Amino acid sequence: MAKILIKNAKAVITCDDGDRILRSTDILIDGKQIAEIGKDLRADGARVIDACRMYVYPGLVNTHHHFLQAFTRNIPELQQAALFDWLIFMYELWTLVDPEHVYYSTLIGMSELLKSGCTTAFDHHFCFPRGVDKVLIDRQMEAASVTGIRYHAGRSCFTLTRKDGGLPPDVLGETVDEFIGDCERLIEKYHEYDPFGMRRVVVAPCSPFSVTDDTITEAIRLARAKKVMMHSHLAEAPDETVYMREKHNKTSFDWAEELGFLGEDIWYAHAICFSDEEIRKLGAAKTGAAHCPVSNMRTCAGFMKYPLMKETGMRIGLAVDGYGAQDGSNMLGEIRMMYLLHRVNANNQGPAPGAYECLKTATRGSAAVLGRDDIGSLEAGKAADLFMIDVDHLEFSGALLDPGAFPAVVGYNRPVDITIVNGEVVWEKGKLKGLDEEAVKARADEIAARIYSSDIYNREAARMRAKRGKR
Image 1 (cartoon, rainbow, N blue to C red):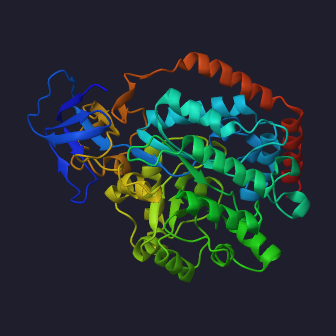
Image 2 (image 1 turned 60 degrees about the horizontal axis):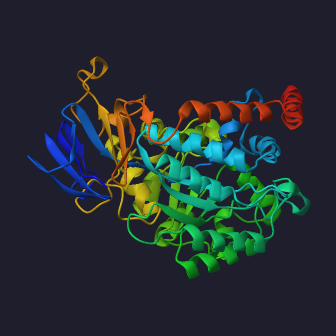
Image 3 (image 1 turned 90 degrees about the vertical axis):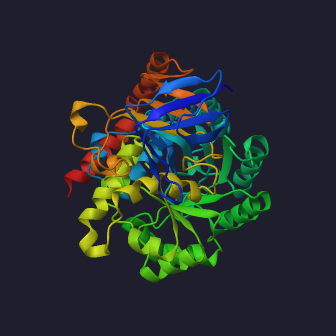
């Protein structure tokens, strides 16, 4: 790898332990890592990037996504739907998923994340239709190699389907042995334990309304034997609370606690419907959570109790959630929405997180949720993951007093100028390195058109229109 010397940055927002913001500063990247940060640095043979107009930030870290949903979003009949109605519709469309669908939807998701400054992504892939080759995670790993993103693959599953009281259709069901066997295969094939690892695997059963109890216990056994992280949806929305009360006469937390599904190697997506006492227990167990502000608003799920969670020591990271629930993949947008969402709810929950804290949630916080200490801040010895934005524009005049707060308070709703992952420039001057965007878009449009013209889509759309008409 060649050296890169970022010269004279307008501001370097380090997100380090001292929360330093450095002005007129250089960053020397040597191979995969940051070699030095300081003034008047020199490096023979390095590529020099003039950053005098630039704010430089640590790469953003996305702790929860569903790339497969790229071809099932902005559906008119679901724009007013709450979680379970939305899921039942989506499950039917996801019976059409195949390896090509997963590859192209993943390319779309990873590309959009890179364009918005995200350098590390976790995806929670739960859809393995019966009869379809189980190479879906492999195709995601292939997409990660093409785009250059740092990727954590969540191998999920449905082991509790409609015939046994679960929500997903039976055709999407797997056995526990199938799930565990494929997790083990993927860990052996792809998981990089070393610092700066670009590929990691997470054992990630889907949710309490789509997996059996033994799925969780076997997932814990495998993950702890292999020393990898675990993940699941939990306490996602009021619909889940009702389901757990009616089906199990317990809360989602009770379910997880009884199964031993707590700990510093575990994080949950959404984590909304917990009592205060449950949150204190989660904090004591050092369990993590992925905060999905836009998705939670979109599905009427509610507010994460962020102030209490931070007080108790829970690890909190930021996430965009899936395309179907969020309709986009912009981590900078999530930072701003996190800031605003908790401002509007401060009278009910207590002090809202500050603007800079929202940025740190998307960097240091998210890195900790994924179990990593090699990413999330700009420091010598850390991975060379960062993004740069040119703030020397008319629309930002008068808005540059606080670079750390800039993404949350001012907002930045355009692609960043440069994204660097593991010491490689992967997005610059409006181009993704190694990806023919027009060719990808053409094939992706064909896949989306096939889904939206399918009998399944037309049937489910008609069902939802009829249901809405009865209300």
